[in-house]
Image (cartoon, rainbow, N blue to C red; front, side, top):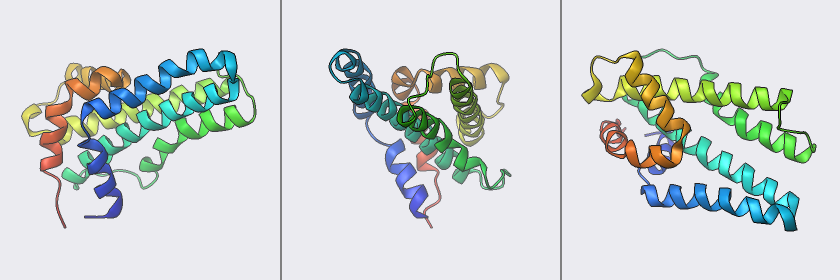
Length: 167
């Protein structure tokens, strides 16, 4: 098992409470902190995005390892860095993330990652043999609303992680 796959599998199998506490903690703390120290609030927003993208990346990595014959471009795993990177550049450069080109790039990359991850998860899960568009869109919605998705997708993620090759 490669190192990246081992890290992804570990992130994927974390208990949902860990991800829920991290996502909600960073997100809820950013509001009051923004009155006291705006740069710290921006850092908390970035941490929220980074944790969320790490979870989505881990699902994608494990799901694509389960179905290795599925072709994918070599650059595709690297797109998962883009939302966090755009958020960090906006934070450092004091760029607005409200109706701006940075926000458009962020959401385009974020939605692309969610779409590719939903397709990979549907392909890797043996219980969803005939994959439908509705099922894939439902999975994408659960990935978008990750605080709910970590709980709702738990059994499917463990099933897919159990199928991961251990080389």
